[in-house]
Image 1 (tube, one colour):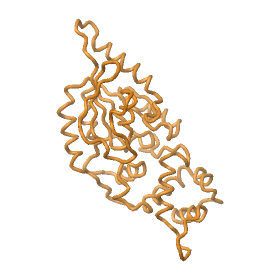
Image 2 (cartoon, one colour):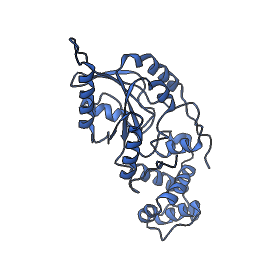
Image 3 (tube, one colour):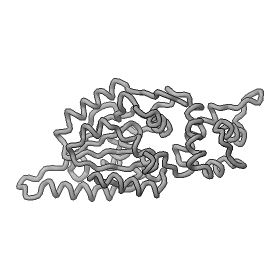
Image 4 (tube, helix red, strand yellow):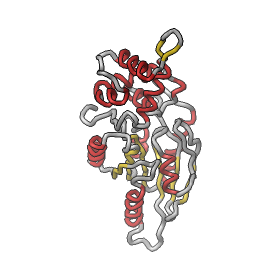
Length: 281
């Protein structure tokens, strides 16, 4: 079991301060979370900082997660008074619906006002949940840097949208310590923690433990296995043998196998998977 995953670079402390300083300048916060891990990808610091503002929750990467689970989580977050949208920020799916919501909120803000002012918003979220992709879709150009590695966005950016609304981008923010080790694992599975600071083979083994319990048939079908055992290491070795991940001396190449399993989970090549189910939290 990988334990005590903590990653809190100095720029994340600065991001917290940045959010605190600029929150009074915006009308609402758009919180982007990962649909595969709707709890682990919600930073409690953001909850604490943004609680006084209207919030839109973007259930991003919803094309990679279970549709049934997406619907259940969306309804759950709506009960707390949030506006919730299921989106694929990379492709732009859901952006027109987001604009309709924002235009309605802007109309409400300017109701009965002689001097109309643009809606100002802040986008927040942990690293690698898709904030930059959403910003690029909303601005219609590559205003924000994107990447499949956490920590790409480095500083504050005010961006003007085509309809005159104003958007404040902030870097991804994690929190100093994960109280639940499963939260750290879930973030690592989905790429929100740099692979370079972890053992890829061990991380993939932990993922296989989860998948063999919750999505056994997807594992069997993807890797053409005869079946699964209760031992995750045996299942990992079976995957490696099927894929030919063998080193000289007939040794299993655990690192290559681990990287493959992680990559194929993250791209939904294995299948649409939600690691956190409502009711099990």
